[in-house]
Image (cartoon, rainbow, N blue to C red; front, side, top):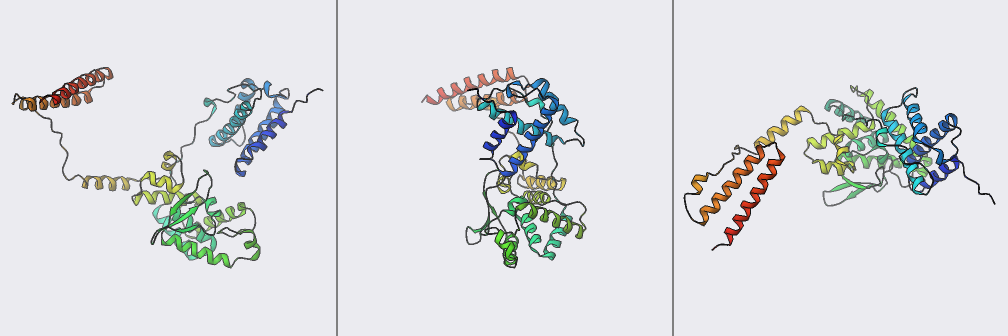
Length: 377
């Protein structure tokens, strides 16, 4: 009986169904979009490619890269990177599953440079005006946005907060339990009295929600009518409106609140490793994107550091002539220590790494001599 070879569409669809078992729905939307657009383009421009084994880097993938660059309106570098990352992951998985597919279809040099975004915190004036306007509004969206500003949550993390998210860790220690989210981790974020007040107000307003909202919001802090997407757009819309009412100088997005929280924590003395945990990051480089260090911050840190050192540190180099004044074992040991110190000072001034290594070997010999002298009585 002749074996039926699955088509390209069937092979990719089967693998996407397998990925859906472990990836989040939003991630699967990206994968299906990228694979669908790639296959549609491939069928239109290279209809003769009907099997994975026929797919080549040149001309097929290189032509697709050019197609992405020539799209109108043009795609951003970040979007093109996401396209390549998704498709490369699918190619690697298909090859690992035993499919006949050429290696290195997508290489590192094919990726456009990653965008380097500056931190986008609100100015101190805009931050104060916005919080005052949200406190004046005092509805459930305003309190949810105040909670985002006071804890640095991602907006979708706030949407998914459970009813029992507030945890008491001690007599005066409270924390917000953030469930597993974007980076597949959960965390406890310390909260102050303002954040606890926002949660308490949200619980009061939730009790006044309609039965339809409560039926769809079982177990969640924020009321909803269905999926979280409409709630997400409602929060973004209300935040932009609050910024307009407060006469803020720039457009405000939910992530602006997260950037403002990060910059405020740094100014209050929170270390970068601790801030990384607060924001739920896995890489300190991601945390640095959220932190704005102004010239005022640099001046404050510099002068604070100077106060910790009232007397300038002076490097004292022992004198070899003084060390050799006594012809006994203590005097010899002191002379060897002084010679090692001078060698090290000289090594630090050199740019030639070969000479530096030679001096390090001489220092090891002097150390061996000193060790043998220590054994003498």
